[in-house]
Image 1 (cartoon, rainbow, N blue to C red):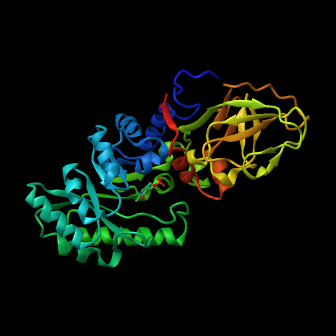
Image 2: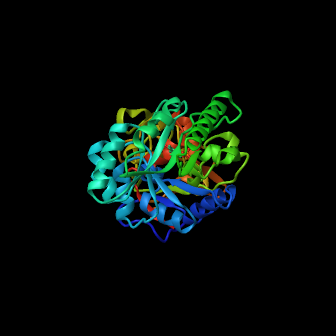
Image 3: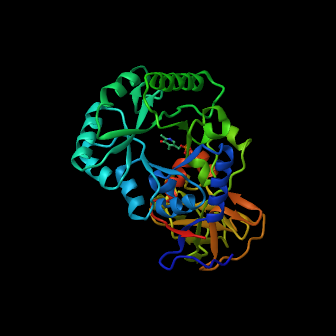
Length: 383
Ligand SMILES: *Cc1c(COP(=O)(O)O)cnc(C)c1O
């Protein structure tokens, strides 16, 4: 598996498959009606996939808006040349307002202190600050409580320095769209929107769906959906996997930096949690570790792919390196490893595949976190 784009500086890297990203964006566009928009969540460096590079590909494939978690993430997109609208998914501190206006970002708003400070600053700057009104319909994370939304809007609407570009909420249980909790959030949101419209307020873009809801419940698409995980080819839950085919965008690769044949009984890595069980084991070193997203809890539990076959990772995973053992048992004849040979950490090699979901399951977490972690330090190669 020779690679044409591998990085010069390190024998471990993430590959981002642009074709897969484009196919996933198109798959989401197909879920939507002609007037419904696609907002792509690119927070946390696009779930570890590289925010600016991913956003450029998404925008060229039809993304209408981008959602980030922080003002700094919005600034990074603007400095990277992204011109589409950018929504900050939580209300930033008042001290960030200057930058929000300078970089033309749209904050989520849910306190009158922020709303009025935003408006004042905008008037002074000769601008009008666009915002999205966040409604808490039950998740109890951010937003104006759904019973207070109308009054809140009334209390800030006089300000000529701000204009409402959208109203949104976020589901806590979109992976169970038949459940009572999801349905209650939907009903509360619909009631808020109806009340705002009845009172004559312009709601701008109404939106609430994340990936799971976008796929599982077309009745809540409203004017826009906010998709994240699915764009990266990962399923938020089992139900969505039955409904839509998505292509994984990220794979993780390394090359072997050292091969040795330790004597039987030799210990491997910190604390010798693994001892070489027999003669003729090929112990190989890989130049990535928990500082790169290979969680230490996976030590002695995870596999990697070598020449189309699963091989066990052995010994404690270090911050920057880990080891794998070839020919651990005499049961099957394995190919001989050499320095420079390619190993797949996440991805496909021949008929074998290791997914981010496999790591997530072993770690007791969700694929979202595993993807973010691999984005931390490894260089990303776009191909
Ligand atoms: C992260 C996030 C999304 C995207 O969620 P996915 O499950 O990744 O599709 C949408 N809305 C908000 C408010 C978010 O924080």
